[in-house]
Image (tube, rainbow, N blue to C red; front, side, top):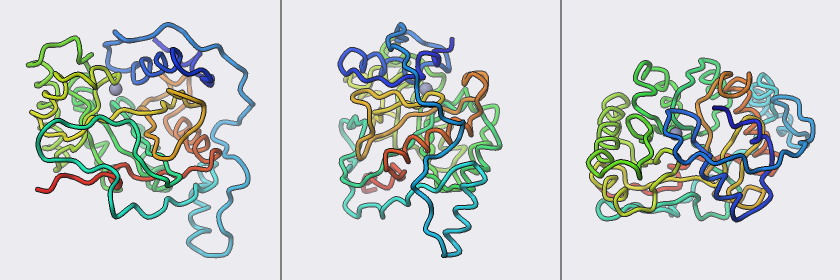
Amino acid sequence: MSRDGRNRTRTYAAGALALLAFATACGDNGGGGGLAAPAATTPVSAAPRPSGAAPTGAAATPGAAPAAANAAAWAKWNLTPLAPAPAPPADKPIKLERTGPVPVFSDVKTNDKVVFITIDDGAEKDPKFVEMLTDLKVPISMFLTRDIIKNDYAYFKPLQALGNHVQNHTVDHPVMSKIPAEKQKSEICDAQSALTQQYGTAPLLFRPPFGDGANTPMLNTSVQQCGPRAIVLWRESMQIHDMQYQSGDKLKPGDIVLAHFRGPKELKGSTMTQMFGELLARIQEQGFSVARLEDYIQAPAS
Ligand SMILES: [Zn+2]
């Protein structure tokens, strides 16, 4: 079940390892697992890193009261504030069309030193995470799976109220390339209507479980029939303490990072907020800020 033991590594190799890293991402929740890869990375001893600790050297500007309040909010979570993201571009790097094939992307073309955090599935519903995001106001995008969240749609509403968008991640997390077109359509369309009804706005983006089938014409057609106007993949996936990189070993401007709503059972005892704190520290130590993915995307003209 858990693959995180070997995931606490850095994947330095490109090529095959990157493909395996891609295949394992997003694979722990909701079954399927048809694309689960065998252990591929060699564990390396990571530098000791206290849980949730942030690197030094990125302290908030002292003096101003808002900065001090902000620093206090971050300190509550044993973090130092991330540099604020630049203002979103007026001319969006990604422009979506109202009809026709949907684009597939795993990063956004930008020179801004920002990455985008996406959080998937929705299994763990930790109230502390809502508190954390309320304090830190780090933007996320939520790709939610209907049957994983339907017992508690309300959990995600305060996260949405912070400005975070809800996006489509199917009804029950199947391997899309293994199901026929009609089933693909119901997986996407039924999730689309449930999420629209619950959250009051129609998801603009779709992510297939495991990233599977993203580039197939069949899945593209199924997405087109249900409303989302883009298929969104990722460049890095957060595990417990570190990220797995699809290629290389560092973040690049505009990368989309995958994480999951997971709790101690999936995280070897770590909590959702500990995992998220470590994710922010990994982003910070590479000199990046976190921006909102939807601020870099132009929705179709209606
Ligand atoms: Zn997923």
